Image 1 (cartoon, rainbow, N blue to C red):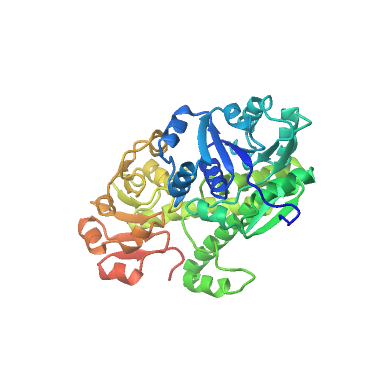
Image 2 (image 1 turned 60 degrees about the vertical axis):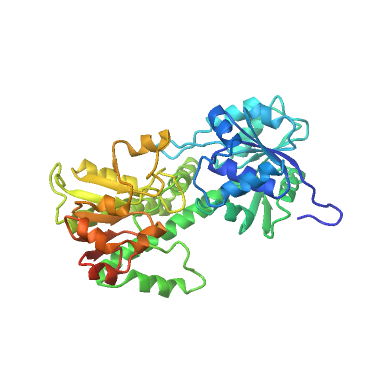
Length: 446
């Protein structure tokens, strides 16, 4: 935190990587008054950003980027070295993909470090913003081979769909490093924000990131397991969640049942917790259980959808001839991110069992980019919810987009071949569904 003797001043910053975290970080830091250069190795992406094209769906990001560029505080360059030579502080926001065993691939970080190390000015600070394994700060220090450059950890806690709000209204800012002066310098960047700033050691900061996401994943797995129990005993999960969520020690956040958690963070970070713990001799069995419950939830949704269409999952292709109208493909509403989407995992298994799937998502109704095409493969796409339901034996809601909560149920009923709606997000009014002559099946609802 700043004091009268140590007034806040804007800094010259560089952000390496213009993906989801990097672009949000750079734009929001510029909105706080800092001078920011965002760098990326993808020349095509940089050119699109210079032309005002935002490559991701994220509420408010285009406005923040546009305002910062217009104010002259945000620019985009190709190549990490080109953007970092003049920077006081450099944020690393590059991918850290994961292997099957949960271990992280740090090659992108190492490549960025080798590019920027020769051009960093003396006294610069390198900030790990990417989610990295515990101990990665030391890895970056060794790769830099610069005793005049400090390294700190500053993990991000951004929710896709609300990333700009989360950055500008954080619950806390976490900074970790052995160099207290460097950590406090990074902390001052956030001084305009009304929030708690926690300065700790690097290993603790890195662990906080994983532990936070692991705990949230645990809450979702817990409520999904409770929903399964509610179905077994005839209880209503909505009432159960209201009852337990009103306890301030528990809270209502992340207690909404669904098809399972996914996205770019929870699957990666939960597996990483298990892997990092194992590397240091601890069996994180609780986290393994959280992952197992999530896997089971997807299987339960597949079984639920099949039963709703009057099919049993027996034999090699038990769903041959069955048509599914799927509403929602992204892992959550408010984003175009398809990574580790439970929707795609469920629909893939239905197709493997012989079902024909026609899907609609607000982010895939237009022209697809190459990433979307790769992830969706040959899946049939519709341009509206009603079109996706045409001739369907069952309609399933998989993503909680607002428009799905107010479907034209009469039109859906008129175009379907079957009569069942499986609402894996519990966003429809069961009475309204039944009034349209359809059969309703939610998650954990009596």
